[in-house]
Length: 366
Image (cartoon, rainbow, N blue to C red):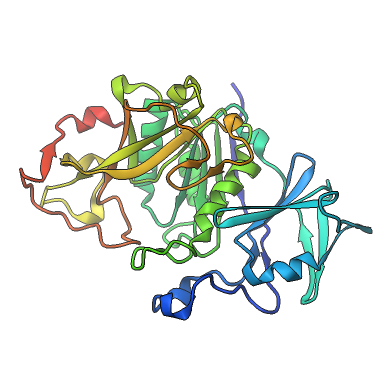
């Protein structure tokens, strides 16, 4: 049996000097707290090695493009300024990166606003080679929730690795997360990434989703720095547990599918026990399906089946055809939440017009 791999990884970010990033919307379209949440200062979340290149990955540059295009990149004394001989620029939805043709572990970027000395992070794809990986971003979700979430997907679906992006949790440390998840029987690789960047501006008030860069870049970062050689990857949140017909492994279903990609809808499940405090609630306390509820899709994919034009996104993989997945759903647990979007911790009374009892919840989830 291979030795347990457990690590905490901190990216090497580069902040913008001089004029900051221009927002993609006008002041008339901004919420009151827009600029408080907008990431104006991150040029690159991380700079890391990838298949004989160096990738500098970050949010869209917006008004920073001219500065970057006129800049000079050095590996030692070698200048890397030619496109596409020395580097390429690639962009996707809310995410872009430079792919620099170099094996250097240090680079220097010289722009009109100043010089940047860049340490190149190592590549971790071998840590996840041939693993079935849980991929998640989280902030302050209770550790017992995280443990139950991991254990369910290990026992029911044969997950054996987890890549956990800790997005500025304050209730505990990244070390606390790592110690807990790495101790779960069946986990062979556990890596926690300290993702100390703002989430960005959510679009719930305006239905404008143009400034929430972080999660899209997390997914691209995960794909290229960590999961390129994984056997399969499941992307879902701590408040979501995957359910399949006959308890089949979702990873095996994906690996055996024609396209190597499955996406599936979910349904809300609630706790209706008025004697349970929201402070102490667990997944197991939720026993009532909300009738006719539909939650946006989540997905599982085989990374080796993804081509360069495909993007891992929050609810799908773009430009990829999903194989049929009628036998898969997920339960979305209403009170497993820190209410970062809106308040979700109120426990409402059972209503037969709304709720359907799932009496076998202890059997369905582990």
